[in-house]
Image (tube, rainbow, N blue to C red):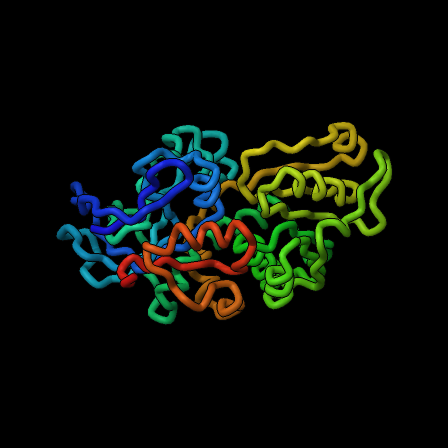
Length: 339
């Protein structure tokens, strides 16, 4: 089968690889759509992936074959629904199974993902796509689940003044879900003009360039501070700037992945009693709430997803364009699409 394979030196090429054979209890899924994630960009463009890795984890698909008695049949439309954690460790007891202490660590470097034609998945970890939800929209399930988790750990509410730094696909989805949940005072900081406009399209109140964010004095608030900041770019400078915009008892939620560490002044954390929290994955109720939200009709999906799917042969070029901020929304890869 064709697959977009990381070959090293920051490059992806399309290669023929063996089609996977399902083990006992597994379903063979034909990948219909797979979104390009910011973490995919980091793994490729910053050369963290291992040669031979197939990336891509935001997918929807169609069952190609399934074992008897599994509850699945060829033609069923599905998305992956990660199993809950052990249920007894400390993170699980706190409703955060994505960081279950008894789960094997994710293999980010040598990952076998969905930038390919077929993938095997445990029959128990799938959920059905509703008839009313298009398959390509269902590929947004994983990032939507992460967004819902980010909002939960932030404690954000309708009375909060919110800043989102970075208006790539992750930041745009954060803005759209915030708006859908009744948060109306949302500012977006983003250097790219096309992404600033798209942020306004999906519900931001205002969009500014990063250089307009005030740099605070040590013990002083900026003129217009925020109670909650979602950092979605992964850039160290953006994290540092976001941190400086917080009001007393404010919360910084780090959503965007990156590999250059920021510098944070611990004295400001103490004086302002700030919280810094990461949002890694999803809530303990899995991906079903994300599917329900996508199916609700409350999100501006036409502005969140780019209109044209791309074939596997265009993954590398599209990643480079995304990294330059030339594309604002989520790009869907359709492995079955001809070059």
